Length: 353
Image (cartoon, rainbow, N blue to C red; front, side, top):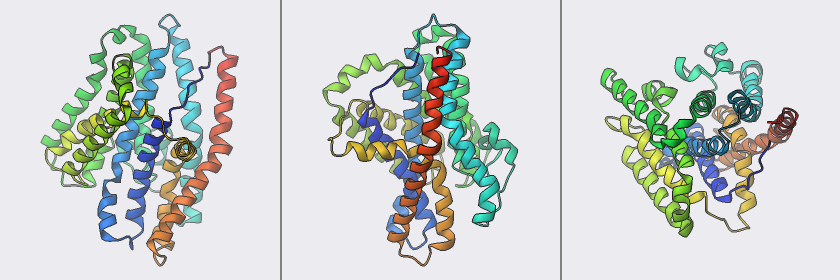
């Protein structure tokens, strides 16, 4: 049956921080007149995706661990995949169609790369040449496909929570191998060999799943001072980020996903129990609701900014790009995401899932 969950304003805040970080990165990259100091600061915006990964593992893991063991395997898997794919696939396919069929004519940017990879979420492994922001969605979809198979088929894993960190360990070892066998000198090799592939960047999701399983053990401690834990996590995350630098190099290539996942985990623990002032809740709610659409759409406006906004003041250009990304994300949420969420609920009810 469909479960209703109380929305966490603290997690909405964290999700908003993540998407705004990514948008800040893309804005400062695209609008060349951005002041140099702001451009340098914007180079760290990629860290927003690391926050998203921990959040995803925590929220999706929580859904899985709340399910009852006696429910038949295929029924559990069907329910899980319906919930996730009705949520993520419709808008993804719409944006992908835009990249494939509309963008070449509207923005005069032809689609590059192997389009057949994208419907199967394989572009993060075999190489992304267009729709670059989809790399992280590939990791999410691989997680949605594989994680429930183990969690539902092997319920004994629930009795051994440390097993949930095995993907993190494997990912760490794979990065050691990659660094030892390749001469990685910054981008784009860093992204194509370490950042983009699922097998080398699963730390955050793995740690989020571990948090979800151990939730009952740390929740009472966090409730005493959620803001303090969130602050400690934020300081840890920011300190680690600036120690790593805007482009990880050397031994940091091995360590950065794990260390950022640790900081983001503390932030998630605190945010899960954080209650925002009522006046701020609507703002972060709508940023959070539209974050998926903003993530998928924003690169279109950044490409437009590169072509058309260079003679406009950087602040005005940034505001226009952000507003357009937010507006389009809101429109597609109402026209695509929300209707499919309602359809999903009907399907779940019809099939008694």
